[in-house]
Length: 387
Image 1 (cartoon, rainbow, N blue to C red):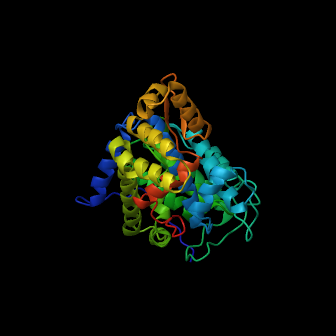
Image 2 (image 1 turned 135 degrees about the vertical axis):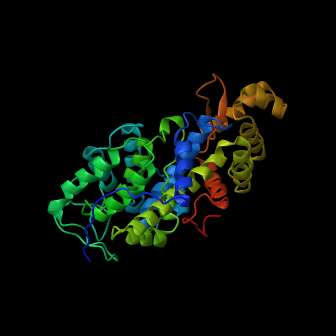
Image 3 (image 1 turned 90 degrees about the vertical axis):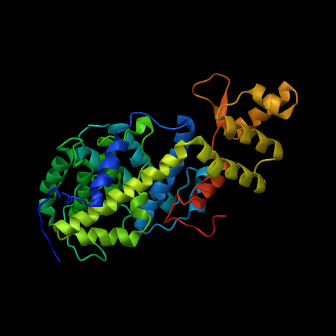
């Protein structure tokens, strides 16, 4: 079924819960700094893990069956693997880094941003049906396409450039007005409706939605956002059904889509806020992860005590370890050096000769991911084999 409708704003009726959701999102986007007691350094280690899961989730929607365990093991043991499915996930990571380096609050999002994100996403991947690449990376399609399993038939290819012009103008208009988040939701749907590339549209639109949120005030540099793709990958069927409901362009269908997206975003941001409280982070994630790492035999009892101290204090020095172990100062230094060599501790960016807990791409990352998963942070990516 081919459908055509204009790109237009929709406005919730008085009393619609969507209005309250928008107000809460606007309040969150107005923050200027990382709020909470978790240090920015620890938060950005968490961001790395969440981005890894976001990339996995985005690829999962497209049929990638890589498990959490396989991805984590690859990041720790073989970060340069040539595996096609892992390469697809790494491409999404690279496209995210591109978005974060290029977009700041208030910036315009351009065709160049969209095309470059797509080019990075499909780079080096085999073409369908064997892989998720595209024969024309970074170029809008020059052929008509169909979406597998969908009733909607995307517009004919000669219309794509004009429709993308309209989409970007719509997104960039209005700045951060009261319709800013409705624009973000509508642009996500409209992009999938246009289907501007031959392949890779889903992965690209989820990155452009991320870019749109940065544009509207969720500034990565201030630690206020983690890529919110979990809204979409937590339930793939609901995602596709909501997209389909909006395809006809009716007011009710578009408002249903906006509620789904914005309520999901708010839940994700509120979930992340829990990790900004160091007490919650320590209790729910860090302590269970360190203890699990010990049970796995990846650290010994002394390492466990030092890492628990780092989790408690956030920043430690050799004198703290000396006092903890009641051993010689040289023994404390030796123990810390060993943990630093294993990347379980790293130097603080702010205090000379001080160290902090680290859990990106090391043995502790397995247990941190497992703890976050147990707390419900990766809904939709549950793995019975990740224990």
